[in-house]
Length: 308
Image 1 (spheres, one colour):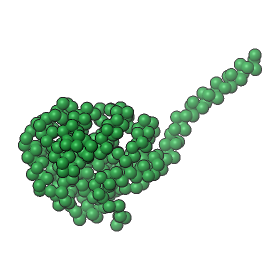
Image 2 (cartoon, rainbow, N blue to C red; image 1 turned 30 degrees about the horizontal axis):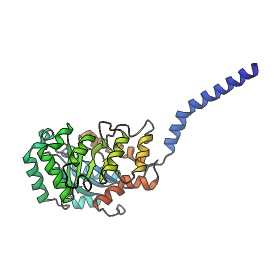
Image 3 (tube, rainbow, N blue to C red; image 1 turned 180 degrees about the horizontal axis):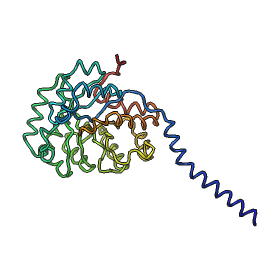
Image 4 (cartoon, helix red, strand yellow; image 1 turned 90 degrees about the vertical axis):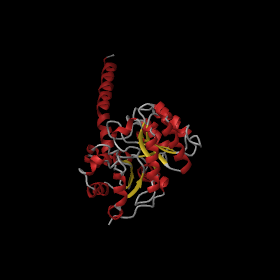
């Protein structure tokens, strides 16, 4: 009996010791992962009016170069910021950065809450699409926000979705999962051929299972992962359900900085390093797809050459 109790105590001590080592093992595993070192496409970048004085053009291009960002999906409030990036072709080429421009729907902050029913926004978008940029035509519209998913049925929202679908334009939308369905219902293809990038892939915390359902339903829907709640766990690596989702749909996700305020520009390097950390724990081909390849395929970008 005494021997049995002694054995039980020994097992308990061993188990407690192993339990105490598990967090350390997890941290060691995280530290052992080599960060992803390949090119990055920043699929959610703003060069807004309040950023342009604090972060001049040469500074933002240097940030991109220093962090291995070789392409950006640029949209700004107002569109002057995007045109500035697109016009700096020589400087961007020297930094190794390709600028893919989108028309943003906001002339000012007041437009955020009523654009979906404002006919003047539709006219502004038409003018911008006709004008184009020094880097070539605009490739889509957005980012836009819908704070109430019912606003996806606004007249301007409906017409712009139909226009994007008909002209093969990409849409960047900050919306919830219900609004995804509502927006897609306004397209001639009913979402079958609509190129929509879901900003933050549900910033309100849409469950991974619901994200998977929408990816299955809409074959050209892609998820952009900035600000995504529950994406990473305490070790900086992907949480299990998100790792499983990215492995299941490796061709449907993008990463972005969302430089909507100047603090995001100030932490640009840390944001990119955070992505490189969890990308490094994925199979190399999956990591490169999410970091670069999916955007390159969507926008027809060439393989980035070496920096000079």
